[in-house]
Each structure stands twice: as structure tokens, then as C-alpha cells.
Length: 111
Image 1: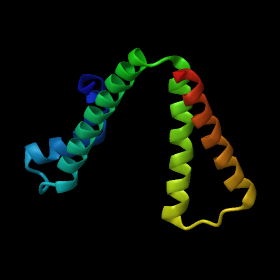
Image 2: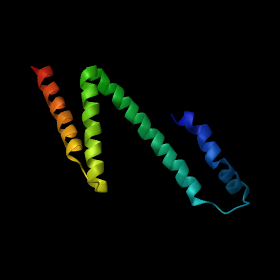
Image 3: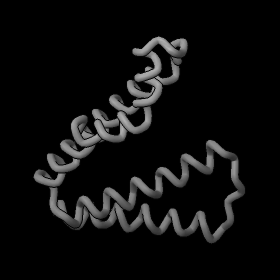
């Protein structure tokens, strides 16, 4: 993954690295931070992809779809709590329906 992002890293930080190596400008600490942030981001993106394929090999496609839906509902709830947005009755009932469908699908696949 890092090899695929190398052109982007060189494009973004190449001029700054050249200036730092040639001694024409003082070292910019943000150039190093950008490089390391990009490297860490690429590493975690790769780990996310590998773990997703591993989970897909263990579960059925329907279970993965239901888990994705539940994850999205949870992210919406957490973002509303974090940002303090107002919640309408229609929105709350939609979340309840999604969670109920998820719970009912889990019980029907087990037994």
C-alpha cells in the first residue's frame, strides 16, 4: 500500500524535501508530520481492508449487510450525541425500526 501512495507523497512533500536537502530553506516540521500521517493512514487502511476480508470469510453476506446497517445507525446516533443536534420523532422511530430489524434477523438466523 505504501508503494501505491509513494507518488502522492512525493508530489505533496517533494519540493519541501528538496529544499530541506539542498539547504535553501529551514526544515519545515509539517512536511515530516504529513509524511508520517500519510504512512499511518495507509497502514490503518490496509489493516481495515484485511480485517474486512477476514470477517467476510467468516460470516454470510446477509449478516455483513445487517452489521453494516447497524454500524451506520450507531454512527448516526453517536454523531448526533456528539454534535448535539435536535432529533425528531420520525428519525428516532427510523432508528428503532433498523435496530428491531437487525435484532429479528439475528434471532431468525440462529435458530
